[in-house]
Image 1: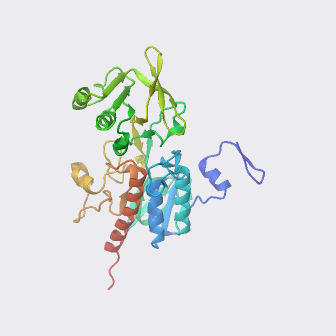
Image 2: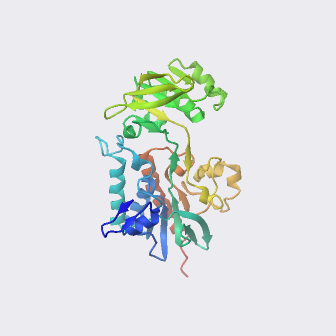
Image 3: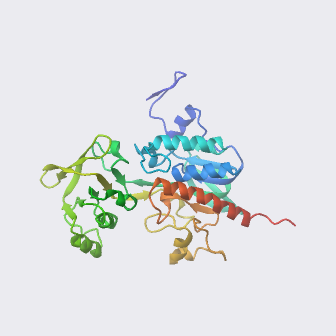
Length: 363
């Protein structure tokens, strides 16, 4: 239930109605844009900020809340310029303000549901059936990491608890005891990589065998590693720490027995799902739904057949020319805030190149 300042009461309102009640824009106002950015996570906010600051008519669409996955992180400690860290919510709020100050049009609660070509334009269909017309599009819808519903975990996101971030955090784990959760290849790869730096790596698997969901070569590498312990039938029951992760309570899901294990970091790799179902008929994706772009697009044989231009695709360009992928939604991306921001900025350079190359020739 929500009580508004004018006395109205809203009971479990949908996002669009809530946004309208708060006076937030839920419809694009311009007829045409030079760039439409879908998703207001770090990649989308960076793209919108740089596009608007460079004079492009910019539309930024966000379905729920700005910041994406990063916006839910309590403390981002390794983002350039913030030596003491910054919360994801504050970083998102600052970036949103920056984009809007430069002139980006931010539209809430209108997720894109379709994308098609109309001549030189790219047309986005919105949830209410309306359309947004733009010469280029940047897809930055990110991913949803499957969460562990564990007591104390959310408060330690960033300072010790990470979803899908083992590669870039590994060197910081030198001499530490760390825990990895997951039974698929991504978790096995993370454990092997972390073992090069950490003093001890514990891999937690809910099932009774790592061979069920992991490639044989990874199973062999884990067995050869002298500082990796695999715990089967085991899950995290609680996280402990004052300001950062210090220990985990583990539970044996066969016996119910619990124990507390010291841990400096917890890496959770139980799957991530990109928000790309609405693009299935428009652009090429990999088997998990991530968008193929640039060189990855050319490497994929089935996707290569759909690239019809004589020139190769630009660095972040998808199979639909003029449509770019930035951040976590892109196949092969590094799932980090700084990387997403960088891709968002790079996307605008590519947008300029595309717009210049496709500008009408004067006669």
